[in-house]
Length: 79
Image 1: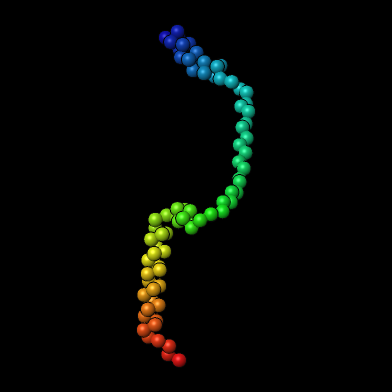
Image 2: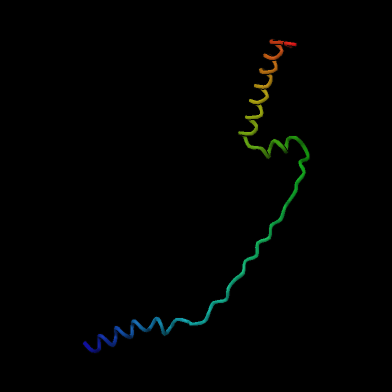
């Protein structure tokens, strides 16, 4: 029993003996922000930058605006 208790104490204290007490060096991370400006050369490139939802919304807006303009012309000028 005495040997077992000595073995248990040795196993409990061994991790303490093998760990280092030194502090680890702190690493510093530097993040740099860079702004990039790109000029769009053609309307096709501008369309490529937009998603399908934006392009579809523009087409729908144009159609709705045409219909509104037609209705306004039908009503005429009230003055």
